[in-house]
Length: 386
Image (cartoon, rainbow, N blue to C red; front, side, top):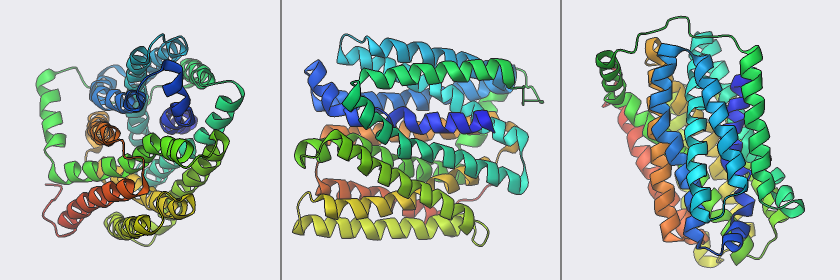
């Protein structure tokens, strides 16, 4: 549970810690805003495309080896980011950071399935989601002070030390949890991937989870420029705002654990998504009245993040319960697809340069509506586990 919690936290803080520094990085390299935002999108892309490889390998060579390899790559790539001479170099090693986090994430999710079952599985998955939510809570707050006191490079010193800590803890304290090794049979691998990938319920819930995560990451790439450059607030103020938003997501995760005792996962996702759509519409209407007002924006975004605290963990629980016998493959496909979804959506959002409350609300309405359609189809049994 210690390593699972630590990896979940790193997954959250890996983006959010250096988000307050984005405007400063733009000025440091003398580059365009979209190239700075690209570092987050490439991180998510690496996180997406590599999970399927690491997850499958962990079924064959064990979880511990993948943890060690991934943590070494993360430590080295984080250290190189400190001395990046150009924004594209920084973006490339952010991609490698995402690749290495993919290995950590795929293995951590598989370790949950290795170690728990039934209600304990849902409980451990919930704690994994909570650990991830701690990153958005603490990350921007710490990052804003690191930026204010030491500059943006301090964020990557933090990442370097964190990756090294995971490697040392894994090497000396973590046992192997995969007790059912499978041979690297490419025919079997292809069959397993197809079984997972073309399962309609799995695919639809993975898309919903990717959209829920995208909602948060979109604000991460837009929020610093909107709040610091357009609204005129300082980096420390942004850190406190991000702290509040992260706390809203965390509260959503906590309420989700309570709601899970009384309602099905599908019902929780259904009502939380409808709530998010309604709040996004209110945010859009208010943007016509008061343009780019922090006091209008903050309550709406906080409520939306709280809804995502229900949506994202529920989608993970729903998908991971389908393929327990090939947990590594299933978790890697889930992570790969959701990471790629986030990367594509955030690249599109970055190109729009939508640093305004109106465009932020508009894209939220579109994304939540797509998620709602998929949830309704699952609720009506158009998509089934078979």
